[in-house]
Image (tube, rainbow, N blue to C red):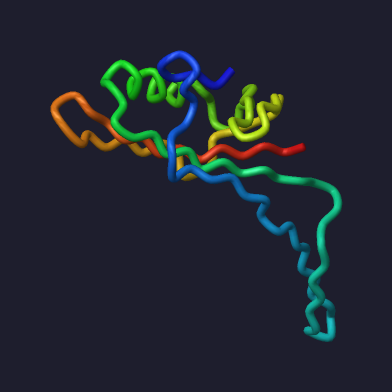
Length: 115
């Protein structure tokens, strides 16, 4: 399960979620191209941006990231819909932690769910 930060606080402003378009491109022997919408999968993306976290909160997110083998899935609750997603992974962008003050950190992490 993705860690919660500071009790119920899960994300802060400047976060977003999106539904990337899922297109399939085909190239024919005649060199013509065809693009169509894929129906075999649906991807949900969350770009989470935490600001002014304490060191222990940033370390909690870093430890979670470091404990996850590549492409291993985990559970994540969508903070907009309060819906639980069972197969979520951390995107290839990984996690970015920036110290913004003596005891203040900003953290960016992108999650993806395949439904």
